[in-house]
Length: 150
Image 1 (cartoon, rainbow, N blue to C red):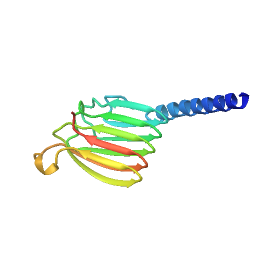
Image 2 (image 1 turned 180 degrees about the vertical axis):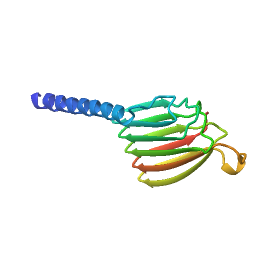
Image 3 (image 1 turned 90 degrees about the vertical axis):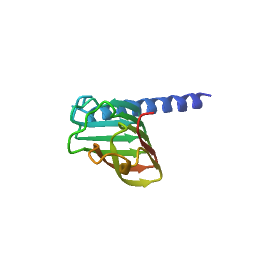
């Protein structure tokens, strides 16, 4: 019985340690980013994170989920006239990115052991002057969804 209690305590301590390190890494990774930033960095390491961009000229964003998840909402952001560049990476994690219905989404993907779901309008169905999102997606044993609002 003592051995089981020691094992459970060890697991709890290690898990707590990883959670604290993940929280610290997430804060360091996203340092200087706030909801009004035109360029954002969001990280979720061994944790979950929600981020809503309210930028008035969103140029670029980076989101990385490692053993965690990110819910990224861009519906309140205004795109830069030249478009928005996104770098989205998941490693044993998941991510959901919500973009406004009128935005064109172009994705370059590198998927290994995971899945990308694109639930957006066909760019050919949108006006030529619709805001453009270029997303570079890397997935390693995780999942990522880019969608319009429900």
